[in-house]
Length: 474
Ligand code: GLN
Image (cartoon, rainbow, N blue to C red; front, side, top):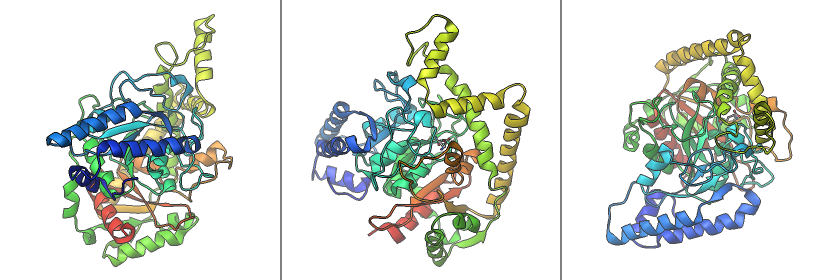
């Protein structure tokens, strides 16, 4: 592989013509082809179009045309984000033949910035899961240790970056699906403020939680890609009117950041001392640290697993095999046709959530569950608003432990508990970053998580870059 530590360096090399973009893409494609049979991280490899994009970029370089800010960035895209004329399965049988008719807004933005798309990545079915084991296209293996899961639901995206199949990948994060796989694969993952990034052209999971974001090997690439993705979009009226600017982070004085920690959360993990070590570094750098008692620690998870299935069940109503997607040959009655299509098209985890979601939305139980959960969500938002008056960042673990083994059977409830530290950011709509704690060869990575107040991704970038320079950069 061509060696460069981040995209800036790669761009400089391209401009100095040390190698061509075509060389870079060919090297990635080679590596993908070697590893794909084992890792299974891609659903579609876009060999032809990636090479074509690379040649176009080489031409631009040769003729001295001004390059876009992501020129040279090779990206893999989670398979729930539409890339025109490519398969977009969302990891589900019901969409196994679905070809995207248009580009998602994020794809338009990446292409306009001269990024190159190399393929579509495997994922948990319709983004439900924390291990990538629910995909109709089979599980993905963790490149750090192939006996283990890569995490989910953006497991293919995380594996693709960790295996050097691309420089950066896009994932979607509804309850942790960028941060948890980033944590399991030793990567950096960012979920922005709800509304920071357009959801237009994304297979909706739970619309009031979903956000697209990047996974990368370093904070520089992560936030540069985020800068391009972010911004208001007329096609998604939930997008917010503010602009994240990569350059702003350098104006932030780390010593002035007030850091909130929850010591019991570190104690819940399998290696509290690792989290403590990073904390000591931050204290030594002069950050003010406050111990927090978070309002009702388990509440966010309970809220999530009521509202998420509710929203999922309404969003998935459109997947009935009538207009598009898988449909069965048996169609004696309309009712049977629906049942056959959805019965065969969805896997067990989706069916579980559809039952849960329609139950909490049913006339009889709506008040007791759905409405209550909405009220609790508002209560939590108000509590955190108060909390953020006295602190800037909250530092907690991303997960309880490292990647678990592929053959470890987990019951659904145990799997839902995987999200205990990640769902709060989605329930509240605040931005959150997962970054890898240092780990030795042969060990499994673990992630540290930083959450900031609404629209303060600049503070996450500042702390991320500080930690990177301090402990990651060789
Ligand atoms: N593990 C969570 C779930 O299964 C998160 C999913 C996600 O963020 N897409 O719902």
